[in-house]
Length: 471
Image 1: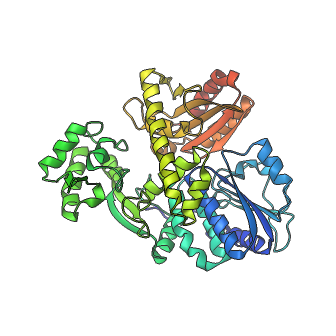
Image 2: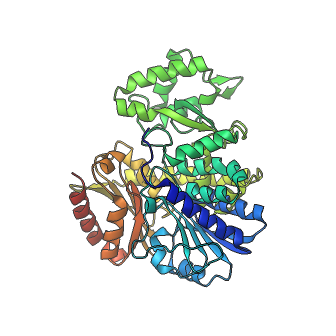
């Protein structure tokens, strides 16, 4: 796994200054993003503030809008702590005592000002990109927030597992089949706190909650030749290995298997893949959270993150935060969100396929879902389509969905394209600005909001920018 490149001491100093600002406050407003990383980040900030006895309110937002900027700038609280958001809008804020713990590419129109303790005439900006650290893989928004919480009080190490969930929710474990760099340090903290058990295993989704057949049948990253999308073939796969699909009338999950059964199945699956890169994605490090019960969906980091995502995408991020803060009664509400999330994702993918929405040009592929797919899930759908047979992994995918304030654009790309020079964050930002919108994000996953009447022009600009970047 690669070592971290960048100025870690300066990054930690920024976290220390932010922590001192937090400790000096009497009141706070926390604003956080609605995805798994944002919910985990907002929860970390809230718990840290609660432990200090600081009165605070937590608000979750899909994005920074003019209304959000106005609310921040007019806030009467001593500090406003923005988590997993905000770095792209530094030039818009003028609030004294603003703390931003983010990992998205910053707004370079305004250098964040630093300050000493008790001087609230500054923005305390804790973002890895400012220190030469890659915010798309080395640390998440929850991770940046956790660093501040840990500087506030070392005993906040018991929230390291939430930062890990945020990183996994943002797929930061994907490229190296495990978390690296600063995320690796957070894993070590979580292990030290007794909250996480890293182990090598199949990295497919659903180790805890999917039946053995579904576990392989619905695999798409990577696809398993002959098994993905074929329940009958999956049944035969286990039968040939002598692995029972149920016990005592209950369907078994992958984590119900004995080590010997897992070993037999894993070896055969790796042989079936052939491609070393696919094998690397299939088998690697996974994260078990032993504090949670089997079958709850919280014991596996990927499944925990999915629960948080399902809450946030359906305007119920508060339920996700309740789970992060230890309220087990919130699980029933979260299960309803998760069920709706699965249904909507499945319906959305079916809609794209049945209506043949995928289009392709020389350098990009794209689809326009109009008002048929929720803007809050179109990015997830785009990522799943990219990993399906309908799409080409060597082309970035651009997805459109109608939103209240224009058209939501989500862009996703295979990591191999980023290695060849693609930076979707820069592309979304520039293309959106050229058509009167705004955008940003990460090199591998980014988004924008644009005027509805300028979609075609936007696509042409994106096409040109991609062609210039990818070599």
